[in-house]
Length: 143
Image (cartoon, rainbow, N blue to C red):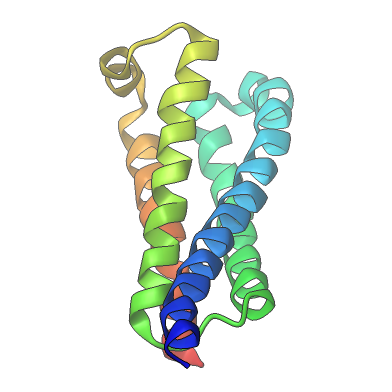
């Protein structure tokens, strides 16, 4: 009996980590597909700021649908702590991908990247990242 009680928290912790990774991959994959379309189709027509702002509702919808699916698929309890952990881990992965992969592809430092962000669409992006991290918790509150 003692062995089972010790393995349960580990299995639950693993499920939270796995849910965070799947959530991150779904949203990052959506952005990975939409990014080139935004750059090639929208930026030349409306400029970078408006292109990024136009993409934002699509990405927030993807975040919402992904969080809802992942929370259901991994049977995340409605309690706040595992959902907050899931959202925070997914957000850390998203920012690591943003600052690691994207900046290396663009050949920029973090300081250069932050200095060149549009103040309006950049602020909206980081608010969207915060919403991405909070969505699993928020969905749990609604359950």
